[in-house]
Length: 281
Image 1 (cartoon, rainbow, N blue to C red):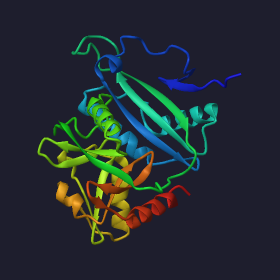
Image 2 (image 1 turned 135 degrees about the horizontal axis):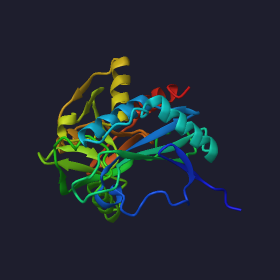
Image 3 (image 1 turned 90 degrees about the vertical axis):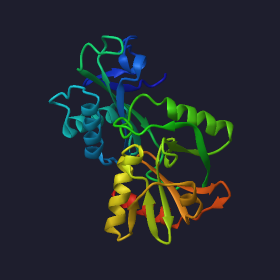
């Protein structure tokens, strides 16, 4: 017998096989949604308050109404309830999606929202990849810089197209270019470059997503007295770097082994992975 899997829709636990979202859902029709990918490590929800803060900021940008009960404490209780029913612990991925309620075409009839929480079991805590990623640039579509650039929108066609290009080029990851021609992020991560022990990353004004893990890495760097600069990243920045690593909340840190003809080490990436795993205790 196949074990049932559950999700939470608007605070109610339902089977994932139970129809819960209408065909005229605005996330499906227009990408009118936001989401957060949250990591459970050693039964600890990592950086939940930062995720909820970013979600609320995105909802404000999209003019979605914020329910009074939409707090870190309430969301945490719902996630714990879901993880218990799905037995997805001690390590898991949780996706929290917020979407505007149905009604209207491009112009919504309401700004009220619904939310969906899903979970998926993961095998380990943060683990650095053993083999460095092989990367290059996806330049067919440039990422615009505007007030939507930094939020985690459900409209991910740019990343889908970059993913297809990565696949066809047989790469592990692609870097995205913004409208100014600078490298702003990868398909699913923020980018950090290490040169002579100093770290460089693109500022949010370059159009990259305001990564929760990006924020943690910069905080850890400050605590560890590692000099960090936010400055536009170019091909030359990466080609002259000693290390390049990528950050997101599910994988933690992944080190880049090769970009074009440049090869990298992973000493700093390993250091930050160790620091992250200390936070899971």
